[in-house]
Length: 458
Ligand SMILES: Cc1cc2nc3c(=O)[nH]c(=O)nc-3n(C[C@H](O)[C@H](O)[C@H](O)COP(=O)(O)OP(=O)(O)OC[C@H]3O[C@@H](n4cnc5c(N)ncnc54)[C@H](O)[C@@H]3O)c2cc1C
Image (cartoon, rainbow, N blue to C red):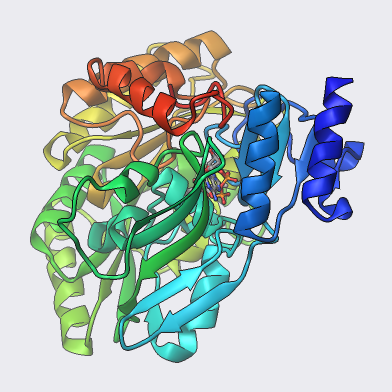
């Protein structure tokens, strides 16, 4: 009865067709791109305005109903799974680009705009929003990117989303509309609530508008793929390139097992199954040439050579996450999202490989696919839970836990870019044994009834 009451209250607050309990609609928002089990919500709401978002939150607060915000649903740690049922607040209709100021290099947009669409719309201004989640840019929304502090290929040069967020509008768990930050590149006025909301994964507020700084499109770029005799050499070269070749905007790692998996795809049979780095230098022609030359020198010192068979390395790079997941379907994959300081990169990747080698059999060794944004120390390891070289869920969990602990001990982080969500919740205390209690206190201020994305992050 209560459920009917709050659903009727939602229908009074939004256009009637913006609230749905249709099984197909509930199913569509029950999961994200992680392999964590989906959960059906009771209803979905698709607001168009901040006022409608605030109305939904007020109904939810009054009735104590959980609310899970959803952008594109491309998250990899279950952040958008409506764990506690209730309402999924789907922001895909809030997809307006509200204002572009080329002189100021600023754009104001609603949260449902996708990364790729924003950059397509900006192209004629000669500006862009540089953080790129690569393989998911077509679906990842600005709200989702802000809420996970997403990064990607170009994080070596451009950092994560946080660096580009100037201001936010958000609706807190009390239904109040809060504007934080502003339009200028920096401010020293008081506590930075904007930076608190960035990366908060829908647990402190619903981001309803973003003001982002922009950057001129690069004058030009060159890309190259380099093959190395061992994964250690590739990692050591990546660390040196990131440290000493300032023209490089991206240094990506892919191990030979990942490349072998890609070779199985139609048309990719010629791709070498070797440990690779994929790089991009950006700038004027002279800068690009100098960056490429310096990177090749570093590579040569580690036995690395240019691979000609791969045309555009990013066309391949963007397919890794989904290809490996599909190969393990329907069991899926377990993953790590750790980052370590660059001098520890090779050691950390070696530890992943030793963990994999410690199980399985000589005929069917366990596979640990390793790839990531090596230039900033982010290493993703995907462990198949089904198909060739698979791990049992318990083995994969133990490996994930031990790698996370190792990353923290080396001075790194348990989550370089995907967020804590649901999948990494038990790892947060490893990194923030004292901070967690303060995070809980902050959560209680922003969301006193605990309705915003319960069961996530903390
Ligand atoms: C093939 C593939 C490649 C990827 N590559 C990268 C990569 O290179 N780098 C990277 O960082 N990530 C990557 N990702 C992960 C994912 O794309 C990012 O985490 C992205 O930022 C999620 O955006 P989304 O709109 O899909 O968010 P969702 O998955 O819908 O949500 C993610 C989290 O943000 C919250 N949220 C969403 N919108 C809002 C809002 N408006 N207000 C408050 N909270 C909100 C949700 O509640 C959830 O907790 C990849 C994913 C895939 C499938």
